Length: 286
Image 1 (cartoon, rainbow, N blue to C red):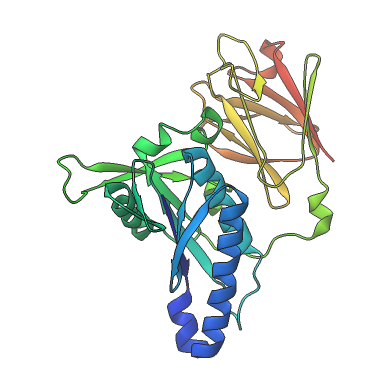
Image 2: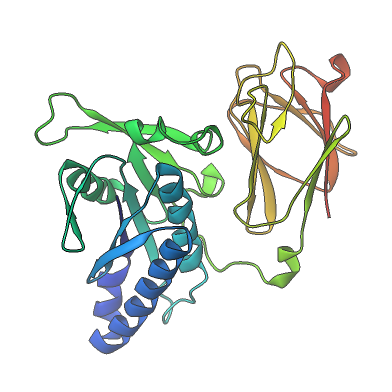
């Protein structure tokens, strides 16, 4: 169950008047609905500046949330006011009746969207545990809240759909067609991977579910991930022993729980320096 709330609508009504604000918010709601439906969601209803969507799986909801943020990010500012969106979702049983849904899952999802900031996706720890390994790797813990009717406090998590350093900032307009053609190429032994799409995510690690599996005693199950965010491919380390990154012409850098935009071409060594291992991934961006 997912709720998406347009952020910035109140100030838009105050500065631009009812008619202009209504048109801009209506366009935003339309983009949110299209993005949700394109990823398997069913829009149950729209309520002013909020959209209520039912997804078949937690993965579909996480992907839909990312697409919804991306769709709103393409909208131009309205006389300097840039609209954004806050999203919260939770996985659980619901009661469906007359194209509407009811129950604790719905109530908790509505509570989660209230906890989200502009540009943020918030979910529950229980939902994160049901995500696929690749999407789980993009989550991080936030804090706990008291949930009405529950004895235990609920732990909140954020799904990061762009680099963590930008997670709660206005994403701004998306790049033009020049960056759309950019490709990330990964080479490991006889295997080559190519990624171009905006929301493609590559997880590297020793777990069999990873997009690029590397066996090594210092490699974590879900060691690091690379995602395309606007005009950059950003690597994020999730490991115990760190990811060693060498950009051609620069010194080797150790990442530990950090993000780093990848440039031109270079090498990734997982868990130990490049000089100490033969398990090295070469990358290039063109």
